[in-house]
Each structure stands twice: as C-alpha cells, then as structure tokens.
Length: 129
Image (tube, rainbow, N blue to C red):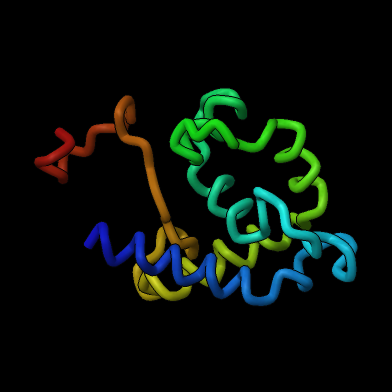
C-alpha cells in the first residue's frame, strides 16, 4: 500500500511537471534555463521537506553531493512557482487516492496525528469508555 501511494504521488508530480507553465509566475521565462533545480526537482524537494533547515533539507535531498544547490538558488526557484501548483497536486492526488464516500462532516480526512489526541469518553462506545 505504501509503495502504491508513493508511486501515485510521483505520477502526479510528473503530471504536474509536464505542464509547469500553468503554475509559474512568468511562464515564458521561469524554469526555461537548465538549472540544478528544475521544476520537477523543486516540487520533489518541497514534498520531501520536513522540519529541518533548508540547507539540511537540500543536503538530504541531493544525498550530500558536493554539487548540492544553495539555499539561495532554491529560494529563487521557489519565488517562481504559484501556490496553485500545490493546490492542484493535493486535489489531483487526493481525488485518485481517497474515497469520496467516507468523509467527516462533509470533509475528507487525510491525516490525523493521534500521538496526543484526547477524545471524550462515551458510555455507549466501549472503546472510548
């Protein structure tokens, strides 16, 4: 299941990267030159980033390669991409991977960090009482 979800996300990133001009501030010039961080790589970095510094995230993504792009290079590329790129990626990915029939108050629940989730007890529910 995990590989299936990961493969699906990679496919949606590739689909997004096939039409980058729809999600760029200046489609005729942005990402037109060959750079270490092309559009698809940029999206991959963003999707793989955690809570570390951008410098550490870039080193991790590029496997500590001596030719890892600078944080400045990443920031410059980031300024070219519209937020709609990530909205599109989220919508297309969730439409393909989450059933629309199961929802929570009309919303699809994608994730919930339950490490410290406190819920009210219910006498009618033996699992919570």
